[in-house]
Image: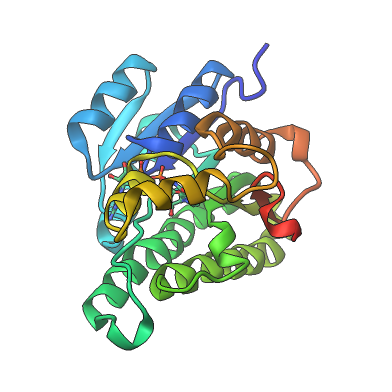
Length: 250
Ligand SMILES: NC(=O)c1ccc[n+]([C@@H]2O[C@H](COP(=O)([O-])OP(=O)(O)OC[C@H]3O[C@@H](n4cnc5c(N)ncnc54)[C@H](O)[C@@H]3O)[C@@H](O)[C@H]2O)c1
């Protein structure tokens, strides 16, 4: 018996990296996964392999998110789990030299996208008298990182927005939490490393960042996510869970 038997799970940014790991693990635990992403070929292939569904959706577009949530409801009649996971790192650079375009782009995906997902799924979950929301934040939302101002601010926003939604919707039997990974070797982190002045030393620095040896794995993120979306965490809401090998314990 799986921990998510019979559950319908929508995952944004589900075609790659951490979201993909969640989709695979949730499906192996009995969920029907509804993968959403801007990467259509990858998302569709994954959804097919997991016997789920795919919906192309740019989370920065409120109408697209509303339509994506409606498509999942039309297909399955309910949404038990929503993971707002889509995110980008944006451009590196100190605030004084950063561009407003980058600020707005990062915010439109990382925080507006999470807001859109919750705004449109909450009426569905309230009507069905329950549900679970999980948002992918970052340790950077707990301990800010220099040279990544928009990303840091967006992830801090995700943590606080998640707490607000947790408080507002507890009475509706809806839980809302966030996860805060530190460094996970995904296409996002690979891009980030390659754009630093010295990728080899950036890679070594990230590998030595956490007190526990090595970088966080996609598997570790997916397992923490599984805990927070399953009944194993039935009385846990409003938390921002670091998955960081002790990085934020310092
Ligand atoms: N990799 C890390 O070290 C790390 C650490 C902490 C938090 N995170 C967060 O984890 C989440 C997943 O990142 P990842 O590392 O797996 O990266 P990734 O690039 O492998 O996956 C991100 C996915 O989001 C999708 N996406 C990007 N913009 C989108 C948009 N506008 N609409 C819909 N989908 C969009 C991408 O196509 C991709 O499939 C992000 O929110 C990221 O900020 C990553």
